Amino acid sequence: MRKQHIVVGMSGGVDSAVTALLLKQQGYEVTGLFMKNWEDDDDSEYCEYKDRVFSYFLREYEAGRTPNPDILCNSEIKFKAFLDHAIRLGADKIATGHYAKVREQDGSFQLLKADDHSKDQSYFLHRLNQLQLSKSMFPLGDIPKSKVREIAHQHNLSNAAKKDSTGICFIGERPFREFLNRYLPTKPGDMVTPEGKVMGQHMGLSFYTYGQRQGLGIGGGKESSGEPWFVAGKNMANNRLIVVQGHDHPALLDPELDALDMHWISGHAPDVSRALAAKTRYRQQDATCHISLPQSDQAHFTFDEAQWAVTPGQSVVAYDGDICLGGGIIK
Image (tube, rainbow, N blue to C red; front, top):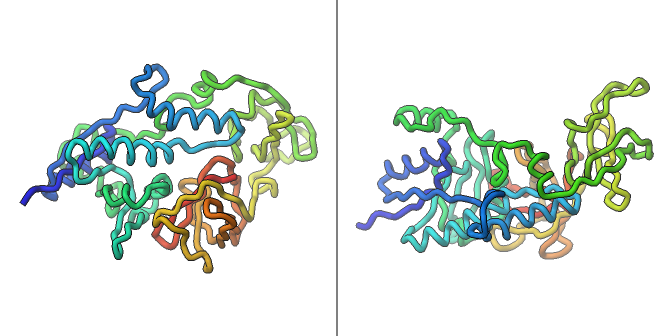
């Protein structure tokens, strides 16, 4: 019988290396493929990535929002352009080192959280569709990260001890503000409290995100409580950055949000008559919520407990237990 041919997306890291190893051990025919994404010194050869991911990223920052390019990279590049290329190479499926799981049930494909919830990456994969999931494998979904390193050491993989990368796909590990500065103009303005008191100057609204504490350059002040300051909003019309003092300031807490460009993994909206859960950022605990659907591509989330620093442009992702239902862009 012909072995199934799996093309593995190799990043150079330990997760994708162990993914390839496990598939080989399971008897698959495995081809490793490295995908070079666009970098800021590349020419038009990489225009697909630049057009689909990077241009969107810059537009969102210019509008004062904080996008998540890794989510777009997954749905538009890794599981679209990369998948298409793998199929052309004769692959039956692709596999990546993401921590997530795929389950087929009654002819429909579900995206599930990884067993190791501390590493779960279903949040970044929530825009995948039925076809993409049907052609994808995530062999690390039921393995804890510590075990992945152990397997790499046992088999003397050269990257067994390599540090995990933390950078955004096309930026890497370099300072984020410095990178952004190459593409977006600085437009200084006032940092103000919700009451309008000027606390300092910002270098341009694009360079700040909701909940940001570092890099504001304002101390506690003699008359203040000494608590740290946080970004709580942006007034685009007047080029003002709204800042508040204290992690639990009411301006940083939202009991509800609206989401646009909703994508449901099953291809249709879930049953929203009962409580579900959602995350408004990666590495956040699931928060119990109720969802209403004013329009097919929109959703309104109401949380049992107010959520901290809900950020326009980021993704809200809905869950039913371990099943990732899909998500949308926070308005």
